[in-house]
Length: 299
Image (cartoon, rainbow, N blue to C red; front, side, top):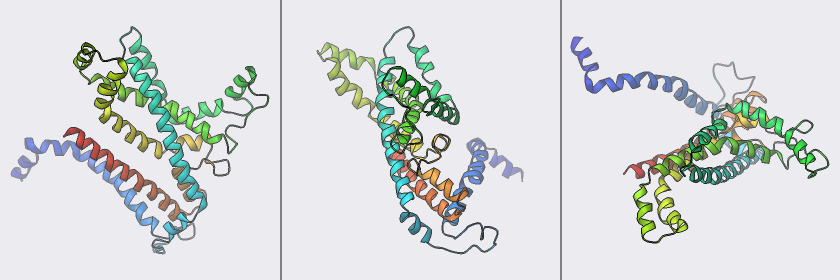
């Protein structure tokens, strides 16, 4: 018994003991729900069969049904469009801000710190703020546009199929800009200043320096920012649910919100689980690319 304790608390095993609580937590609260959700997607579980000990086996029928469901296809396309649009604007604005605050001026650190506030605010609070901004009757945006004489009547930003997605993208871009800015700023600090000094001595201009030094050396950072941004954006739920709840007419349903609707509003638990698993598989594929990119960067 004493020898077992000595081996367990040996110097080489201490790290395992520290990791063990986190591993058990992840196993219970992450691993088990994922496995349970996968099993659920191959069953036919509704309100009628929820309490039955032997759930009917459905095989791949739930996956066949959702891929024939026009709302699911719309949700998948919405998620892709939402993710790509958010990534493009978040990255471009964040990149420009990172280049700007990389310059040495007195208030750069203070202003950069203030710009992190949108990222630190809970997403639910941000969603409520933007819901008020894009409101039809008491919305700040409609009031501002009418004051400037740009519109005569209020625009139904959140209740129109033409503008609801635009409002969601604006809200998510506002949240994601600080994340892109801070990671790219960190990447810029790793570039040796001697390279810029040598380029200046060789007569290279700012444009040449940017494309020959800054961009190539920032490539690992840019890849990480885009992949992580894709993962965070693709699984969006709370922002959409608070602002539009997937409406109007399913025009802003994402995979996450449609999975919630199937499971907890329509009580089609197995189909909701199948949608969630599609989301999981897509994120796992992107996650593998991220791990591979990180490994190549370390090598």
